[in-house]
Image (cartoon, rainbow, N blue to C red; front, side):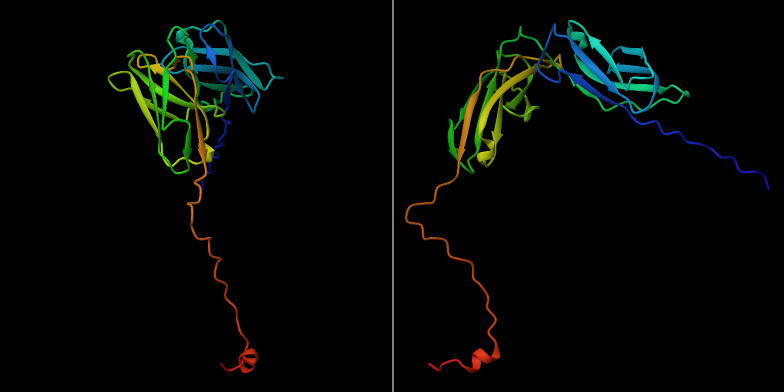
Length: 233
């Protein structure tokens, strides 16, 4: 019987990629992309989707490869991934999950914003937030202060506006909201954040004269001995 061939499969862990700073980056700022590795790597590559790639030698004592973008330009904006090759073999990892570098261009005017109903609303109300710009064809994004990512996005109408609806709001929806937009031709270029509107959601008050809430029914088990001692009516 012929000897069986043994094939060794080497699994190369996928790297992760992070962006520093991760948000609020404007054209002309410096940005660092860090490719985090779990094994020693001989080479690390940084890819920009639809564009160029960087490669960098990796020192054995490091576990992170850094790529710096100095004085960022429009062509630096985009979606990035990284990949590496092991030091001890020719095995290559899968590409990392993507990160998006969005650059703010302050030449675009901030978006306008309005809120309806204004400010104070009760729980369960539907709230409409309207964003607009100076007729730029764009994708609008709705931001809530305290949230790292936009909470909604929407294509503009033919007159440079977008309407967002918050259905059945609760006190958790209270806060400051702002808009930004990204011109259709530049997916990863953003306008500055506009002015904010404040939403305050209050609990629904009990209607006047409403009867008090009845206590929940409770079940009791009556023993035979108690039944025997019941007083006849």
